[in-house]
Image 1 (cartoon, rainbow, N blue to C red):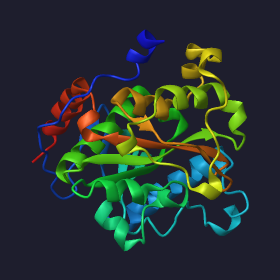
Image 2: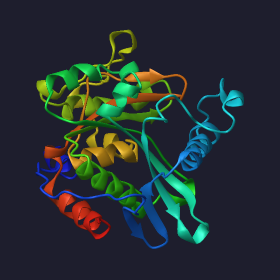
Image 3: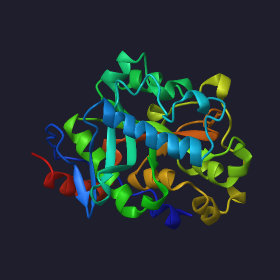
Length: 285
């Protein structure tokens, strides 16, 4: 198991570079794809429309509210968030991928973090008063663009943003499909046994929504099957060095089972910092 884990949980590294982001400059480009921040409310609306297409139409989320949503996935957090966009320049600048970024100071304007309805994030923030937190969420990509290069671009943009705002810790919910945790017993149990943080970084699901992830004893786990069944986004976080909080939460609105991701920037593997940092510098002012 330890040898397999090394593929997904790299050794710690420390960032040293800073990146300047000016105006609406692109944060990266691969082929016809470009990543940047949304520039105005119209572009935020494009991100919301993309989220609706993926979450509601493709994944079947928000069925009860879909008729009221005007073909946009939107909430009160959108106004205070930054929105990372991947656009296809060969398709007229179509928005094909997005990530929502909520900085700690902006979360105060919205009354807290989005994830706080599911996990006790405020306790983690209070234990680390000198650190700056960034919540990542609403990640989605159109089906035909779900490739390694699109994910590379999104993370290149996130790294530039993290450096620009001197973020110390990235957090957020990541999801398994469906509302029956037992279906994902292998993967959830793997996370519970192998991917938990040190106590000072731990976050627990709120008591009223807590569901155990420890569904199987460690000796019964098939590690390869657990990793193979894990959503790509969660595996990507693990590769970077992320850990997972205590308990999962069922999100009936989105039809998912959510876990909480904790990723201190100081824990990101050096090879990823070198990769994303070098690429981000190419597009820095």
